[in-house]
Length: 370
Picture 1 (cartoon, rainbow, N blue to C red):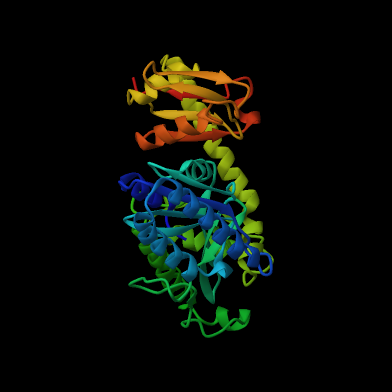
Picture 2 (cartoon, rainbow, N blue to C red):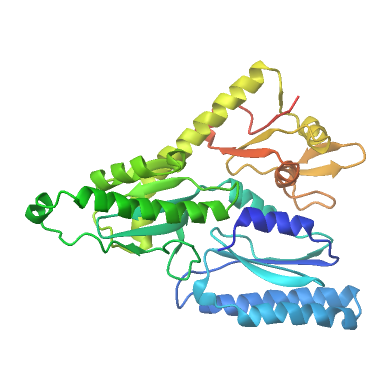
């Protein structure tokens, strides 16, 4: 799966009109994913018809050739929970998403990225490192859903996952007690696993992912001790019943630890919110938030998870007026998404918080830079 933060940056940089966005929920397993092929082609057909309504067919055909080449080449057996196709005269690409999106085809002057922005910032994306005496595995997951397990196709200078330990010659407790060098051999192996992990993390640039380590208590402790970046490790699981289980089972084993990590993030965000309140740098009025965001004065937007608000946006007056009917003419169905997208584009942070964590605090609060 592509790095979604990099995808967003690339889409923002693309200058193409029209910008075609096709989004749809997908299925991970057969036979459900058979219907994804039909749904994608139907949505692409909708997009083509809309293009032909407003453009000359000689302009549309080259774009559709780019789109259809991607659609025909896509293997739906690798689908996750959502799919996005972004296309213009400059090219077309398909992005797999580890969260569901609403089905639609959109023709606009910019790409429809709001679902990705909200899904990305409202998720915990992380690595699971599985360590034993015999091997090390690496899994990428979002929330409670696996994305993929790294395999021999991963290009690393060191050792690609899964990494097999060929140094230890015995699994017998008696034999191990007779092998004084075993600790050193095990440490060398775990060090190799960490080096491969660090290489993969390094390829993500500043977007390093938190790491959860799964294994028995001894191996987990050794891995953490040897890690070049122990600050990346946010939790551990030492009671997983089967380290050779499929990735769905291992991600499930990690969920209590993921929940604790998410709670720690929310606690940190609430501390930041409290500090900003003390410094008188919080805004809760929609128009005041909009004005600060458009002026580049947005450090962090705190959003109650699941919060949406319909409204009208007046760019000239720099105001947002809330409405009850998101389907009314001239009304944006969710101005919160608009604000999230703009804060993210300006380099600000987004913090999604549960209703329980927020308590009586406003469902939308902006922490200003000054």
